Length: 182
Image 1 (cartoon, rainbow, N blue to C red):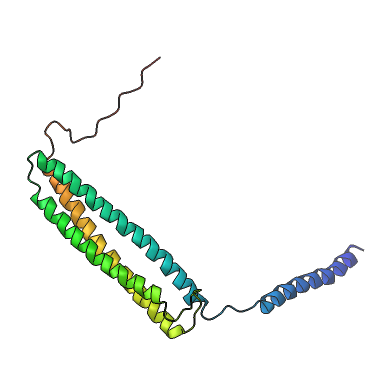
Image 2 (tube, rainbow, N blue to C red; image 1 turned 45 degrees about the vertical axis):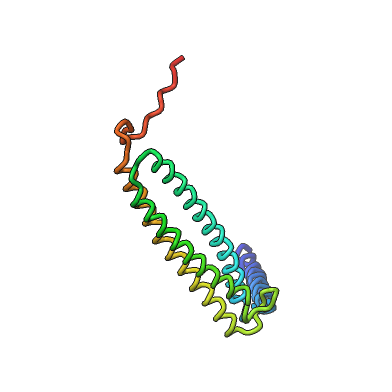
């Protein structure tokens, strides 16, 4: 009797498994296929978002340069030689202007949105690819320019601080006092 029960459940389990597989395949086959231009449209949105973030970053770097200039003026008023840092800051600002020009190139390419309509849908795949390539190349150039300029300015500031460290300032940061014992 036990053997009969096993064999009677087996066809039922097989039918349930086949039914679940057919439902899975049916929904997969019935799903609409993505547009071949979907990747371009998503790339267009990503590049627009990246361009906006890059603009904010360039603005912050400009603010940083202004703060460094103010700090240089304070140190210069104390009679310190700031020639090296001033030269590094001038180079940084020139690189910032160059990066801003490259950013404008990327922004112009996306603003003209050749190959895309106003909603960001692809109208011409070849022109859309060219638009994205132009924008990405310009944005990569902005990154390379500012990365090198920022590193050079940080190095100049580090060397200046080390050379003009106050003899009373210890090399090790101060340890806060221990809390009072009750």
